[in-house]
Image (cartoon, rainbow over all chains, first blue to last red; front, side, top):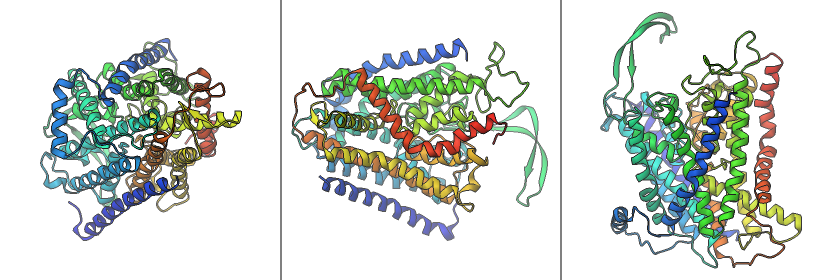
Amino acid sequence: VPDAENTDMQDIVFVVVTVGFFLVAMAYVRGCDGLK
Amino acid sequence: MTSNGWLQIFVFFAAVFLVTKPLGVFMARVFERKRTFLDPLLRPIERLIYRATGVDEKREMRWTEYAFAMLCFSVIPMLVLYGIERMQQWLPWNPQKLGAVATDLAFNTAASFTTNTNWQAYVPETTMSYFTQMAGLAYHNFTSAAMGIALAIAIVRGIARREQDTIGNFWVDMTRSLLWVLLPACLVISMVFVSQGMIQNLKPYVTTEMVDAQTVQVTGADGKTTTQLVKEQVIPQGPVASQEAIKIFGTNGGGFFNANSAHPYENPTPLTNFLQMLLIFAIPAGLTYTLGRMTGSQRHGWAVWGAMAVLFVLAAVCCYTAEARGNPLLNGVDQKASAQQSGGNMEGKEVRFGIANSALYATVTTDASCGAVNSMHDSFTPLGGMVPLVNIMLGEVVFGGVGSGLYGMIVFVILSVFIAGLMVGRTPEYLGKKIEAYDVKMAMLSVLIFPLVILVFTAISVVSAKFGTPSISNPGPHGLSQILYAYTSATGNNGSAFGGFNGNTLWYNTTIGFAMLFGRFFAVIPILAIAGSLARKKFVPESAGTFPVTTALFSSLLVFVVLIVSALTFFPALSLGAILEHLLMHAGKVF
């Protein structure tokens, strides 16, 4: 069972970076389309 | 080396050739929406799925919409998998009462299975509950493989279409990949595996008395070492056969057990070993035929198959030769193959499989983006271990992963026709489409992300004594190879490892997680852009100046482009790692 003291913040960080990565990937789609 | 070993490699190669056409024809019919023998059963289910999800199967997508659908379909299940791992102690099917997976490891594993990598920085049987394995990991095994097929079909459509803005419907392609290709095959494959002795249950682990008690030294929390007599052994159980089928057929590679396909429950017989290798190559080989069929140039499909086959044979011969020679520093040890022993370098290999089948499996699993292993690549000779590493560095385009092998190779095809066009001073053409600046830019973006991620993360890791080098188990060039292999495997979405390397640290879990995400999505987005660009182009009839993409000359050029791009990029790193280790071994020094 995780240590409740740190893991809430770590969970938030990993969820945010995951969503952040995919938002960047979506921007990359726009960027590639814009190069045309 | 034995004639038996060469014969087994030849039989395997022949079997790959034989499955190419039937599977290729079947997949072409599935994605061209022509009738197949499974239609009476699956077509009603497919319609039901579209009705339930609100998908209009006739509606087509531009490449950008296709890419957005792919990204949305990846991020949400990745977060769900992260949640399952973090909450598995409260979820069902956890007879061993396994606790929550640590945050960084959960992120790494979620990225790993979302990207079809199946890099495992953990011991599955002591980390993941049955529920996590079945509902979390196996779900991604199916969907990530289906996504690879869908993306490959999208770019094939882009090549085949003329003056159209769309490349298909992502949801339809995914549904058809899953319903027609992966699910029915895996049902049959898992039954075959069960017939060979692979287990399939939800039982708690079994504790048995050992035939020979073992004396072991145990270091306690206080750092003191004590000697203990171990009389019992815990034997893990689980739904292995069903996981194994998609692990192999979807070129996922994540083992139910830590020993992966070296474990007797995961690979019980020589027949399952042969089938596993064949199934890894089945869809990727078949897709080359699908490419030929859907683009109306079957000879081009075979030309691509031929280039892949040449690269495969080269790698298999190199790996088998290196491993069969053994270690020259083992003076006085009989390493020759005989009726009594496999001979060669047997460290880290299953006696059941021997040298030939271990070297062949290592070649196949890294030619494809599978990553399943039946031997420990870390224990291979320096040159034998370099073969899997180089295979991944080539971009896993030697048949490759399901879908990813084909779309990766198409990028090299575009670069090949571009180079051929430069040599004769004409605008390059590919199957009636002019290859222009935008297409080459996108191809280069797709190719360059791979070395960029690998070499930058490796460089940072090898100079850090705080978070980088403590994870390696061997000093010197082999330690460099361990780190280089880890990032190469992750970015290439392979998942195999030099097993002495400890990837379960905050630094490696996080950076390897990102390497997998970049390696998958930042490589595939430019490829979808190429698909969209090609679909819009007018058809240009072949002329006397067109470089034909259906000949042995084209296959040869393709092979050289793949080798040169990889060699120029990674040779410095390889020369400091595996090549230096090989030279030092012959000078009497091992690591």
